[in-house]
Image (cartoon, rainbow, N blue to C red; front, side, top):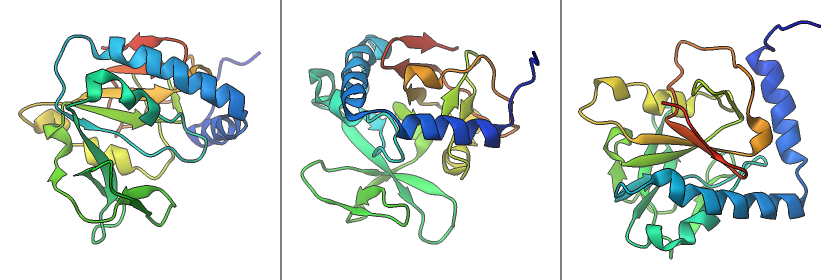
Length: 197
């Protein structure tokens, strides 16, 4: 038996198919499990500005967890695709009472370009992923949007807490590293939380 690590593209195809195959009942249970685990993962630190995402392509939906009282006074920011610089995204304030419009990938964004906040100026970002390992490496969808948005965090005066959101089955023994990887601080799944740094 080979101990070879699968290619990122191969693993991405496999895990995306698994993610899309999760039944509606299992998805609801996973969402509840994640909602139970997220507040403990945040600890006692106060978060005022948090980046979140609208789930697509079978991703675990983090939004039901945000009904917890912990998020009552938190300003939430959604990723918005840059209209000029293709392949880039920015985080814009999400007013929950306002409807979203679908971007070119069918993912909801604020209709009006609400106040933007730089990634480094957020307190935490809930990061979608396809796979993760115990070293904090993340396998994304392959477009590089989050990689580019987080690329310069090391040079900034502060850094948000990067929290991966995943089903437990997305955990991998080891991912092939890429030079552009931004390590996650922790991952919260439907089963448990992993402190990675």
